[in-house]
Amino acid sequence: MNVSMTNGTLNYLVKLADEHKQDKVFVMQYQDKASAYYEGEISSFFKEGRDYEIVEKVGEVQSSGFVVMNNIPVSDEGRPVFEDRFKKRIGQVENMEGFQAIRILRPKKGNTYVVFTQWRNEQDFEDWKNSKEFEQAHQNSGPQHKQKPSFIDGKPFITKYHMVDPKE
Picture 1 (cartoon, rainbow, N blue to C red):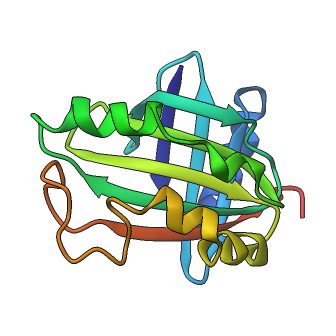
Picture 2 (picture 1 turned 180 degrees about the horizontal axis):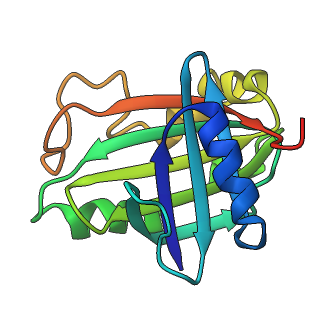
């Protein structure tokens, strides 16, 4: 399954989603940032999209909710280790109140993986982030660790979005 994302103005992305209604393009916004997300069988139709393959998938992306993307640069030799960690993960996030979906996305170009999680709302994400389950899931490589795993090849960063209903 293919995933593609692109950035742009909210108006442009809403228009793009409208032009591709049959392809289920999701539009997201947070403050002055806007992004579009497509997941499906066809390859990207975004002119300047970032393309990914799904390594792991749980749940279905919803048209409403709060999205957090952890963007993690991974070295070429570290890719198998990184992916294996996620395939063997405990899966605690799926059982959290408000969880909707998770995607582990392997970049088709470049080295930045995306861990995409979707929540019913921002508070549900904050509850997860402050939970003992989050602490357990990140005990070997979480944000509190001073030494990052050897497969990390740069500084990870997080992007957050609220889903936008293009009809509104």
